[in-house]
Image (cartoon, rainbow, N blue to C red; front, side, top):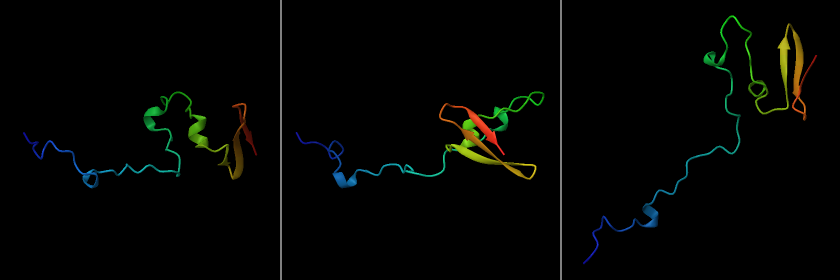
Length: 82
């Protein structure tokens, strides 16, 4: 009894060995708040610090013509300085 060609394994060169592309580096995933994530209009908007920092330990925030620095400490606290 012989095996049908449908029962034989594919040769190595016919097998798709490509792996899906995975970025080794690049910008962090967008964690910006979406409208559905924001609270109702009658309450104060809330943002996760990770969404603001986006993987950095500090970011610059401009307000009223001045530049402020928002920094995360090793203890997990936030510092805002002018």
